Length: 447
Ligand SMILES: Cc1cc2nc3c(=O)[nH]c(=O)nc-3n(C[C@H](O)[C@H](O)[C@H](O)COP(=O)(O)OP(=O)(O)OC[C@H]3O[C@@H](n4cnc5c(N)ncnc54)[C@H](O)[C@@H]3O)c2cc1C
Image (cartoon, rainbow, N blue to C red; front, side, top):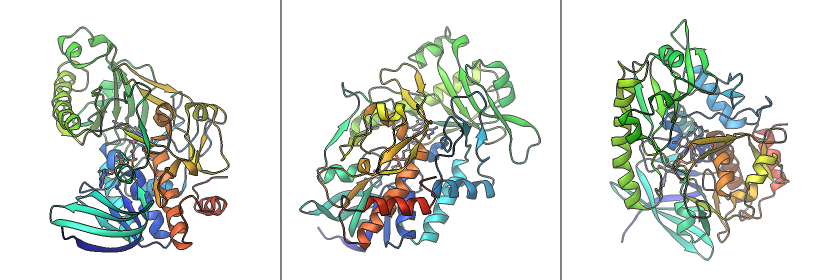
């Protein structure tokens, strides 16, 4: 088959989600000719479904995440797309960082363009070319034809680790019985009376209130509600697998809200037919939940259904790297000689059997190190993984998959790939001390 030749690159980043976009910006800013290939027509991946990168600070109030992640928040604040790091008094997080995901998409486009990244939207990495243990080329499928791009270094940020899997790198999936965290489809509703909701719906955590742009009164920003009082309704019994169901409402706006409460268990996020079926079911589910909220829940009676984004998959392949981050590492707040940055998000476990969500706090100083070795999958010489497919156990992933950690991993992977290309080294040969010095200078590793 004839392919259209796209070019020779130093670094090719596969997947333009949180990790991938930052990896591409980082590689390009550090001198690498960089290609970014993204399956959808926007950047940001799952994070632009409406979530927030919560964990810039440890539970004790120490800054854990900086670098490009902070640069993005600063630009969002300038464009009124973020309220910055808001102190969440009494909550399970030290701060919450509300972000308008539509503005985030714009910021990411600007940043990749300014960095000089060649971005291919609506483009899926379908196959690879290999020489020994090196991936030398990517076969990229678009509506308008099939492309071949060659690259010296590959960063797999597809979430599912599609490229590392094609290259034969070994991976694990799910907990011991193979079950993974549930998938969710997030919906956005307009015309919600947020104040009424916060005053009348029970919650076992504090509600975060803030002044938002173009408003002179405080409204709820983060509302983790409980639907216990409505457990006996026919609709709740059909819709939810648990009692006193949790509903996470995120509102950087005055009367719009992103609702994270749908859940489908037993879906393998890399089995086509399962994902296909889940897309159908999840969309019907969020509409039914919307009708339920509108009928019963204070504040929602006049709301409108804007719809859902794309199916949110929490967990699929986790590659076996030179080190596997464990639950114990996370909970002990362990640091490593090859830290490329810190994670500080509690262990956020959505029960694979459909029960509730639990948050377990990180011990020590409230942060753990993310070792470079977790980004280096076994069996391939020039591929790094970053984002939710890194080398971590099922439980450790429940923390390190958070958006801010993915940003840290992305920036570090981009820099490591640029260094490896420049110095003609494999991923394993990268001088980690030098990488760390550069990461310190770029504000990723904080003193
Ligand atoms: C429902 C849900 C709620 C969450 N809530 C929060 C939260 O509130 N706070 C928080 O910090 N974290 C949250 N998370 C976790 C966090 O959002 C994700 O773990 C993180 O964004 C993953 O980033 P990523 O870059 O690794 O993967 P993704 O965001 O999944 O990005 C992967 C990208 O690769 C692209 N891609 C995939 N395959 C290919 C291919 N073959 N070729 C080309 N492109 C490809 C995809 O289109 C996508 O853009 C949530 C996750 C889910 C699912």
